[in-house]
Length: 333
Image (cartoon, rainbow, N blue to C red):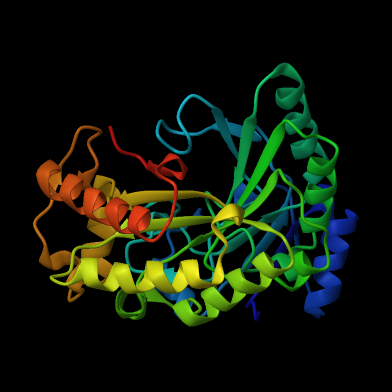
């Protein structure tokens, strides 16, 4: 990973995670700053500038460390939270909501992991039931984990907190650090998958489907639990055939007993993100379909179309041997 500049908050310059990151990058010079927000995003930086240069910011996450997820983010009737330990992603997906969320595509690492874990512990102790904590809301949770080095710290914490479940959401195949650890019943690595044809079109710079399936197979063979996100599902005249092939290939290498859940979600945008997609990818096939404002003010396919698509994919999953109880619809009514 090559960064143009590295900015480090004064308050974390001696933090052990900061020192590990800087040592790994072997960067000749850093810029010390007071607060990340004093520099990051102060001047709007085009999303596609990530193709030519990125800066790195290292600092302390302040304010709300753990946030409640939106409705229909995970299994119904369970508590779901996500924690923020990074901003932005090295991949470039044409539908990515981050292009309309931050004013800059620069990468931000937060290194106050002990404070984040203390808040997770507080919430877990308050709950008598299973409670979920998701990583990967504003970043890919594994893509740069070899650089950030926090993975083992989080897994060790969840080893001691059995009612708390950790989900690491990723499109990465960077599982080297994970394979050094022992599987846990409350730690799940979840992969976002799209058929190869669509992945090549829309998931720019991400590992191909074959490599993601290879990573899933390695994790399953070592006993890790896996989640699958077929999200976003994008309409294509033969999308059902494409998904049938992908689901069959996936279940050939992933024992159903190690599959914790499958989430299904149709492509959707906020108004701001849709504007950015139109600006950044004006010739994208993604824009060929008709979209409407839906129940939550997000821009989606019309309701009959998206429910038909979701029903089709769900039927394919069940046909491939996946228990219907493990399938949920993401961010739908």
